[in-house]
Image 1: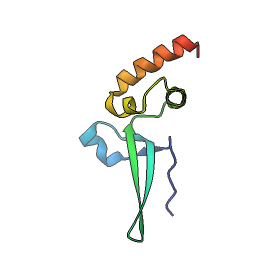
Image 2 (image 1 turned 60 degrees about the horizontal axis):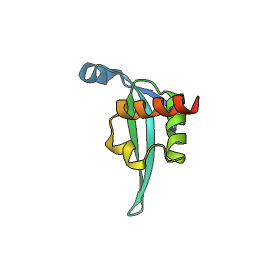
Image 3 (image 1 turned 90 degrees about the vertical axis):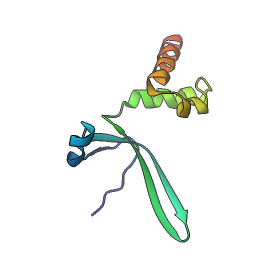
Image 4 (image 1 turned 60 degrees about the vertical axis):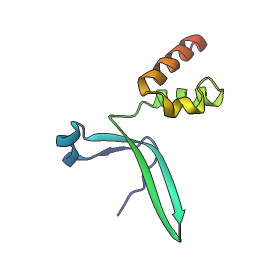
Length: 93
């Protein structure tokens, strides 16, 4: 029986660790696509384990326009993390 994935779930692929030096991944995003009467799902995975605090802080920063929508897709994760740290220190979060 297949279990549906949700955001921040972790997935382990033992067979891929030889190629990527990692076997644990977490679900960053899920998209359901309805096309020509068929439904498919696309899942974005990131290596490692999820940081729930970072994801909540990122959502808040996007909501109050501290981080632009484009930044999320144009900047590297370490650059976004630096912006989030500055924001969190400034807001004393």
